[in-house]
Image (cartoon, rainbow, N blue to C red; front, side, top):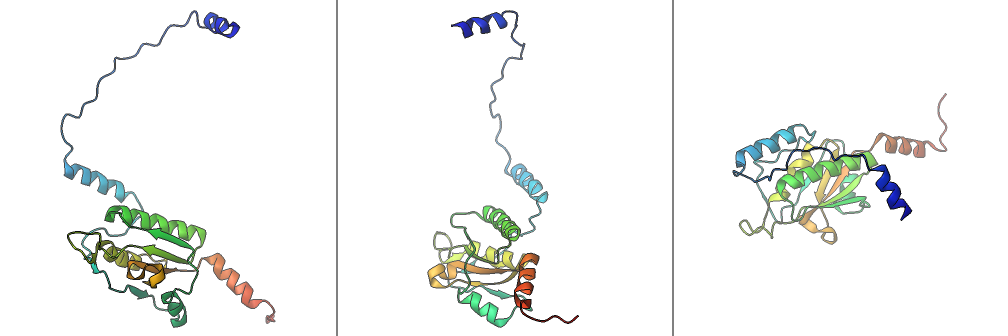
Length: 195
């Protein structure tokens, strides 16, 4: 009881702060959809995400995604296509909207770049869950386009059946400077350098 008495004696001369009476917040009118869209566009403009999110047609569920930048060796691309590289990170886009997938992919690639990852697996689905356009993958079309737009993507190919088949895609990223240096050092060991 001694603490309570001490506290009461210390607070004896204190007066409560004056404050304005609270107002009840009531939504008076519905927010216009165009205002919401404009606000979303403006917030997206501040982002560094340059991936397009409109006007890309869906792709057939069985369409095989494939892409290789010039300079990628055929053997490297073949190993990627056959799923022989270890998958260092995975992203599953099932149940994502196009806008959510766009944001998620952009942050996924930024994180992969930061960590120096090289091979990724993205599961976009085949589009069978889409009741209106059954058998056409909306996200599949967007992923196909987005991957070609991201500079760090060197190659991609639809996955093998054990990794999702045409509902997933293997992605090969550009080597980071650290990985390039490690490779040079590894291959130079034991070799005599000219002086």
